[in-house]
Image 1 (cartoon, helix red, strand yellow):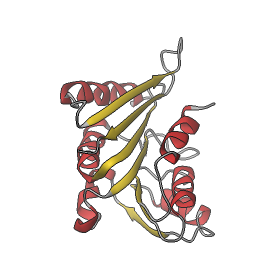
Image 2 (cartoon, rainbow, N blue to C red; image 1 turned 120 degrees about the horizontal axis):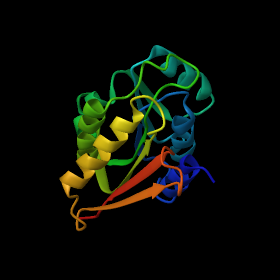
Image 3 (tube, helix red, strand yellow; image 1 turned 45 degrees about the horizontal axis):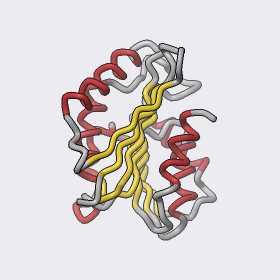
Length: 188
């Protein structure tokens, strides 16, 4: 089982029909498709990406999914500005799949400085019991630095266990393998 499958299975335990969810890095749309299928037509999916190609790919992939969709050609660090105020603190799931858009320009990658800003906002946007998954890819150029900085930020953040649960899943004996971080906001 791949880490992306583990992330989706973990989120699927929590997401309900009608929920509001975010795909913070649309890419080719596979996480958005999973989210859309989970929330159905009464749910709302927000998606962010800096490449029009990602928006196009996701829109095409989700054309048969009846959920409410808002895909924004914006970096994920601008989530708070684009999610309606009444949704703040009510987002049930947020997915990050960092790195680059597969089969495209590999020089366009996510960066720790904007990712950490987006993660800070994600912690505020999450509902009580809301879940956040973060796929890190230290095996590509720039991904190792981003992964290290995100993990360092989380360690420095000292997510209090009364407020948040954090789990890190690594692939054993593969130092440059993807890393999955799972954060659940507690019902406080």
